[in-house]
Structures are given as structure tokens and as C-alpha cells.
Image (cartoon, rainbow, N blue to C red; front, side, top):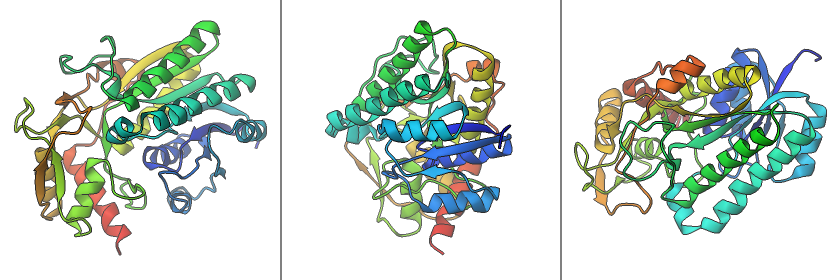
Length: 337
């Protein structure tokens, strides 16, 4: 298809990647997914087809496999790439730092080499709020000096720097570095959502599995932070809002050069216990919990300043915490039918 606007999506079978593929198709792009399924499921491809009616090209390969990337980019003349692939658990990264550096930095390096070789010089990178320093005043602004508290964050920091250096070396390059805050929720259809392999690391899928009786109770990591109720405060954003931000970022990358970091959040923080209360209210399901020790590398409060996303991308989050909880529960309920 000569006029098809292909976008390479690394990690496209995962939680954020799959929702972004839906938004790409709705915006006239054709995603091409490469994913080794280390933290996603092959079923997501059939679910994507059910939502979009499209057979999305899919390759079960590791992004560190340069030959696989070359083969895909030879076959599909991509206008841009979105780079989601990578390990993503803060606590696990503290326990397994070398694995995180090898995988996450290896993926970025190999992707940069392949994109450069195929003259694909527009990329949207899945970065993270974990690049910000402990103790910075919230809301967090892109101009703040960076400094991470865990290896996962450092892999995002270093990957951001790779893209910045590429943009300095080659003025045709454009890199939009999207610093996510905490994506939760699911597609309104209830067909795709967050479905990690094994015990969930993230709050919402864990809450949902406690609510349906699959897990006994939610472990709340620390209740002695300097926050509204002692539990950690995060800026939760609906995954569909986040997915839409990626489409806007591609449009920006196609019209601008250089590297730019942009927060993607709502500007509103909720504590863990506030999320639990919102989930119980939205779903009518009880979520028993137990307070346990803090996790290493966690910060007390992480909330985005959303102004830059609004100014550069025209982005504003549309969904609130009730939508996030209702949609996550709908997906979890459908999984267990």
C-alpha cells in the first residue's frame, strides 16, 4: 500500500502500546508491532483486530535483534517509530540492575542504529517521571535538573540522552521524549487493558485482582510519607489519554526537528488510599489492604506539570479517576467471564 503511513511500534503488544495502536489506526496510521511478549500476551493481537478490524503486522522478536529490525524496516517504509519496549518495574530494577541496563539500553541502542540505517529519523520515546530527582517541588517541570532514584529511571534517563545526542549530531532527527506519569484504566470496550504476566507490579491491575478475589489483599508500600494520608501520591492518567498523546507527538515530530521532553500527566495527584476509595466507589467492590514497608526507590509525591504538553502538542487529559477505575474494572471483569 503505497500511501500507507507505517509507524514501527516496539513493545506494541503491551498495555500502553496496544492502546496506542488503536489510536494510531483511528488517526490514519498503520502500526507495525515488534514485541518479544516478555510482559505481554499474543492474545492482544486478536483483541486489537476485534476493536479496529485491522490485521496489524506483528513480529515476535526482541528489539535487540538488529536483523529483525532491518527486515521489518525494509518491508515497511515507516514514517516514524514509537519506542515502548523495555522492562518497567522500579522495584525489580533495584533487585536486577544489570538486566535492566542490558535490556533497556540495548533496545534503544539497536533501535537507533536500525532507524538511522533506514533513514527513519522521527521517534517518540516512552520515557518516565522516574527521571526526576527526589525532593523536587511538585508539580514536576521538564526544565528541572534530572537525577534518578532507581536503575529503571536511569535507563530512561540514558535513553533520553541517546536521542538528544542523535538530534545534535544529525539535524534531521526529531525525538519527542514523553515522560509518563502513572497510566491506568483500559479501553472503553473492555477488550484490551493492563494484563501483566505474573503478579502485577502496578497498582491498578493489583487492585482489580484483589477486588475479584484472585489476590487476598493490596500491599500498600509505606504510610509514613509526607502526604495527605501517608501513602504515596501519583499523577494517574487514563491510558487512552496517554495513547492519544503519542499520536499528537508523531504529528509534532513530523513538523519539528531536535529533541524535546514533554510530561504526560493530568497535573492532579491521588494517594494510594484515595485510588482504593475511588475504585471501591466506582465499582462497588471492596479492596482489603495491608500496610507494608516502603519500596526502595519510591518517591513520596510525583505529579506532572502538564503545561508543556498543552502548549506543544495541544494535549489535555479528558478522563478522570472515576473513568480510570470503571474502565479498568470492566476489562478485569471481561477477563474473568
